[in-house]
Amino acid sequence: IYDRNVAKNISLKETVIVLVVFFGVEYFVRVWSAGCRSKYVGIWGRLRFARKPISIIDLIVVVASIVVLSVGSKGQVFATSAVRGIRFLQILRMLHVDRQGGTWRLLGSVVFIHRQELITTLYIGFLSLIFSSYFVYLAEKDAADSTGSTGFGNYADALWWGVVTVTTIGYGDKVPQTWIGKTIASCFSVFAISFFALPAGILGSGFALKVQQKQRQKHFNRQIPAAACLIQVLKKTLKGNLREAGGLNSLRAQLLLLTENFPASCSFFF
Image (cartoon, rainbow, N blue to C red; front, side, top):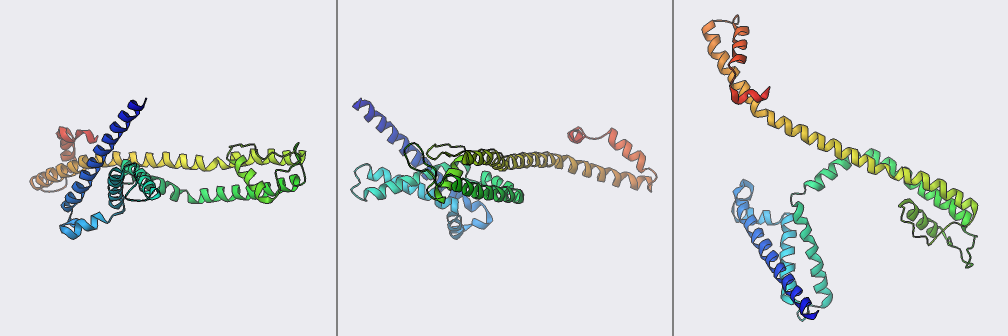
């Protein structure tokens, strides 16, 4: 078992080394290639690119990984807590999955568009949580369970019970004992759970509409080359034939001729 664990640790360390080398080379290549854009030309332009938040995060991940590999498990250079803190920074590697931040921009746009609906539902849900927890506290503050202790000694306990009930976690550490408290808890549970589910539906419909809008925009972008080709052919044909015809009388005939002899490369527009 010990030999197997040693082999696993060695293979894991080799994998980490490969990842660190890959991310380090990739970081320096991105900084070097940033000069291809006009706003990042030269040394100062590349430094400006390196000061971007995502570039700083990449550099922190690479440096933290190198420090962890250098120190190892001995912790002779830094304190153990400091090494653990540096190891925690390696979690930032997950940000490489969405370096451009498209996911966060999509989420932010959906939340911003539906901000009024979300604020309304959260406000009403928060009010129902406050009042229902207070009513349960009034009904249960003097009630005792089989052990002789009350689970709702103060209003904070009632709020904790309300949050646990709304989120459907159900720890069971606080349970109403009186029939009044149970009635209030039942009504609150049915209303709050159904009402707090509204933000999920709002965000879901918002994401669906946003994806549909992106697909429509993508389809529109595919039609732009065909439209440009149609305009160019129409312009050239009308310009040449109107000169020969000497007026606008032959415009209808020229349009019919254009549709008959339309280039095959632009036919997908129709």
